[in-house]
Amino acid sequence: MTVLVTGGAGYIGSHMVRALVEAAERVVVIDNLSTGFSNFLPESVPLFIGDAADENLVEDVINSHQIESIIHFAGSVVVPESMRDPLAYYRNNTMTTRSLLNVAVKCKINRFIFSSTAAVYGNPDQVPVPETAPTRPMSPYGSSKLMTEIMLHDVATAHGMNYVVLRYFNVAGADPLVRIGLATVGATHLLKIAVEAATGQRARIDVFGTDYPTPDGSCIRDFIHVSDLAQAHRAALSYLRNGGCSTTLNCGYGRGYSVLETIEAVRRVSRRNFAVQYAARRPGDIMTMVADTKRIRSTLDWAPQYDDLESIAAHALAWEEKLFRERNGESQQTASA
Image (cartoon, rainbow, N blue to C red; front, top):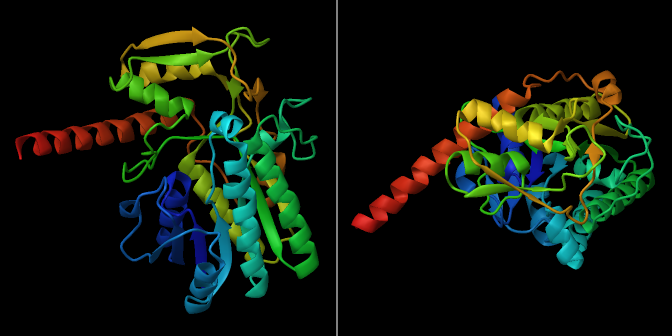
């Protein structure tokens, strides 16, 4: 039997695919390559270039590859972009998942893992935030994911499907073997921007808001290494295969770092200084977001391997340096051709 990974050529999806392949799982990927890269996938993994909302494509892949579980990553993830173009987020996130679920029900897929976000909580009343906290998203991105969670719950209840919703906190880092990482041009992830600044690809890094009621005035985030997140998905798949009931789980470490602390961690591991510019608060940003991780640790057979901000920053930096060398080499070859 085979696992279908939508968005499997993207940043998190490609780490998931490699984790599954290394566990001797059979994997098939659907990705439209809008933010993914086909060369991030092992050669043994079939890639179908297309949209997860294409019901005919998805049905063909499920039937031809004996799919028994779906792990759904495909979607849009940039909070400021969602504020500018909310309809795109409701289409790419909510409507795409509706189409995917329609096929899953038709083909009797009864295991589904969904990539959600801590943005569904908005500014939480308590920190660390538990899965039972009120959901009050502050952006169309968070709203589109929450709508999808509700839809998944209703579909699963009606059709006997079991699911795991994984609410990501701040995903960062790269494959420790430097095979894959975050390569999307214009990415807005804090650690990505910081390592770009450390490698001289940005003149500065902007910090949005220094007047929050936090110890240093900047926002606080709970970072999770992308490889640990991939292993959490593997553990969720095992949980469902072993008869686990549908559940929603926070994916973080339960420890918060401020934006300024994160920048200092990148400065330390890179041994380079870079300019920081302070700006006003940004619409849709959440002040403090730290996961209560008791439920995931008690539900899944999962233990983080990279629960350390400097390790996450070091892996992100190593990947960025590799990208920088490759891009410079390509530029030089083009110029001399």
